[in-house]
Length: 217
Image (cartoon, rainbow, N blue to C red; front, side, top):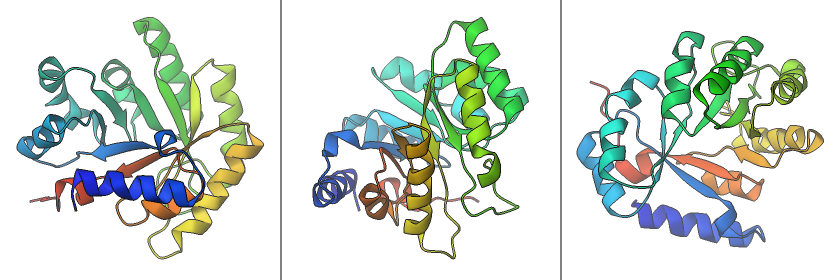
C-alpha cells in the first residue's frame, strides 16, 4: 500500500461511519524505518509522524525539522521517566502516559521548559502483564490526576491484544473516554485502522502499510 492508499482508506472508513475524514489524524509511524523512506513520505507532503523510542527520534528528527517545515511528532511508545525531559523537548504529543510518576514528571518538566504538548493516557484494555498502559481499574484515577496537574489531556490510547478482536477494545476505550468527557482516541494500526475509525478513532497509527516492512536486523 502507499500513503495515498491509506488516506483513501481513512476517508472511506470515516464516511462509512458518518464521520468527517478531517477529524481523523494519520500518524505515520516511522520507527525502525530508514531515512530515505521517511523523506519520501515528507516529500509527499505528510507531516505527522510517530516514534516509539526517544533516543531513535533524537537521532534524526531535529535535522529533519530543519529541512522540512510543519512537522508534528508524536511519541507512541513507552516512556521512561528519565527520558521525560528529552521527550517533552522533542515531541508535540505523548500517547503513552500510563502512571502517576510519569504524569507528574511531564507536568513539571513541561512547565520548566515552557512547552505545551498534548497528552494521551495509555490504557491496557487487555490487562496484559507484559504490555504498557494503566490498568482498567486505575484508568479513571490517572485521567483525574492528569487534569489536576494541568496537563493538556487530549484523550486515550490503546494497543489491543493480538489474539482478540480489536473492535472490542476500541469500543471499550471509547466508553472510558466518553465517561471522562474526552474526545481523543488514539487507536488503530495498519491492520485495523478502519475498525478503529468506525469506533471513533481520532488518531490512527499506521507504519508498515505506508513505509513497508520494518527491518529489525
